[in-house]
Image 1 (cartoon, rainbow, N blue to C red):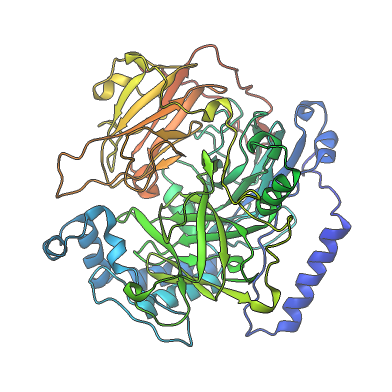
Image 2 (image 1 turned 90 degrees about the horizontal axis):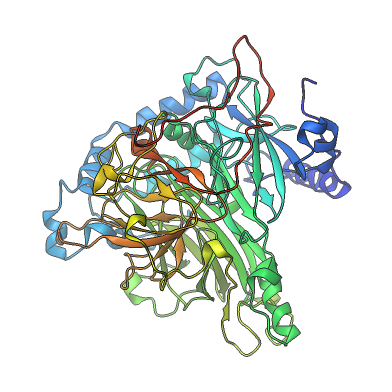
Length: 619
């Protein structure tokens, strides 16, 4: 069999495609059409057609890595060269590196929150905007031109469905359910391009799944028209949440992400397992309706400059009912190698200075961070959210007036509120993040997300981590060797399955990400924007030139359910490619991920994606 079988699209899908096509044709070439990203269609039929080797999967689907055409690549690369070799960019990067700090120190601004001062109430075309003259703030017009260019031209790299052509960002939405085994068939770019970036793999960021065997092992790779198989088996108690996927090929992560090879992934809520339900059925219905009242927002900084965020085509405009609660899933992806955090805000559409804003157009409350529900949902209302280049945040949001969505000081999207379609808040089944009595609710916790603040941690399970631009704990990445604890003040041992680990993360400009195991912040004062007691999979804990004695951020992780190889790295992809990446081995009596099936189609004389041995840290 040379091609992966496909299932027949449903009638609903066909009608939706026809409707989108009709709207596009009738809209005219000069009208921007906001369209939803396509969704990966899982099929049990495909698994059955593939035969006994794939019978262990509940559902199967294919996703294809794509490259832009030669002409499109030349156009994008020329645009990048024209706009990134200039004095302003050099000044920005020097500023963010700390080379220009005297004026900021006099103003009392912390290095770890540079973007706060630079955020402005900018506006989209047709309205007036105010612009900061600060040297680190890119010109608004230039930013808008950058955004328009990236929206009008194909991505350099991307992910697409098997029945689609072209290459665009973000990739198709991937939805999954807990307690389900998926066979994700990943095909390389079959382009005739001789581009050296064509070798690729796929990582679903934030999932609590295995990182070895035929699972989410970052050493795997596929190229050309070969097809490899990822066994993505979610534990039965995997928490529902917002995740994302991207290429994780070492040495190519930066170019692939910069080109647009990423997309959003969602694990569906298992409401009975995630919500503490009392005897009032109406309350449960109300919260359930809210969690299902989903909106999605994908925000990306593809140019790699401060403030140069843009929204995907499907995330530029929202039309909502006045005062209705929505669950907004937000993904931020940034390739900026000089600025760690970016502020997400919802601003009035009229030109108002920030210090004059009393009540914003929207009420927002966090309900989940990095795919993990908060212990108490929702949080207190907030005006600003500090996110790094790998963050996801789920927000409960309701707006009473039109709003602009701003990231890093740039308006990237708009929200229109229809006052004539106001939500009926008196209806017991109206979406609400609160119970009927107006109170928040407690989330149920699976074992891997249980509260570890009172746990006893052995000295053998403590570690200090220092993330550099080219290394972790002074050691650059190796494909052939795992990292020991003795690389930086540790015991020299591997890591132990079935234990609670406590790590101290030194303050740094590098956002720190751990695969498989979410991190609970246990530093009593929290860690910058990361709250005490909550879980995150990517941590931004900034160094501060005014406070050289800033203590490390203390986090805990529960090494349960899955073990074996685990990756940890700086999530500035350029630094990850330069060696700020490590593999550790969580050893013990953990479930063993199978090696096969792992290759569906292999061309050429040599083997494809063969299992690889790796030396123990003490060897």
